[in-house]
Image (cartoon, rainbow, N blue to C red):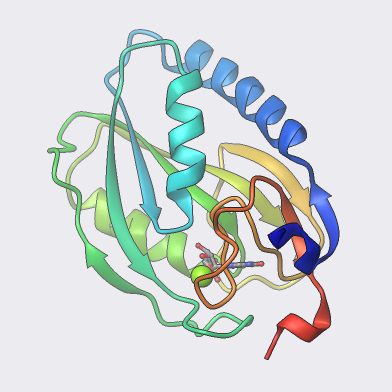
Length: 180
Ligand code: IMP
Ligand code: MG
């Protein structure tokens, strides 16, 4: 079992799913009658996107952008590379950017600036996790936050360590021996 590699579970599967249905309820209430499109960031955001989109009961589209920032380690490199643009036109759309975690803010800042070039009618952000940090590199306003968590390195539910553990249904902290 991959969960055996965890020191502890921070957010259990049912807790994550419960919160996603609450977020979906808020999004439905706020976006009814708009031209909503969810845009998720590869790769961490796609697990969250796939659960969230199925809970949002109003018509909407989704698309994916590619951004890579962390490299191999557990601290942000500070460099974000865009690896894939959206494929659907965002002109006059109400864009909700879907991200796994708001850490230093670099990824969200870079992706937000990219999406604004496409001329959306509105652009807001929904992040599953929000790391409690005192000094963040970029302050990006987040409209919907799933959970506020301590400033620790977590894995699971899309979040990886060296491209592993994305498939865990829960979110937790790895045992020290698994960080090489
Ligand atoms: P930022 O650009 O520093 O905000 O980092 C954002 C990206 O780094 C996220 O999309 C994640 O892919 C990755 N990241 C940040 N914190 C963690 C973590 O605790 N575990 C795994 N990946 C993380
Ligand atoms: Mg990563």
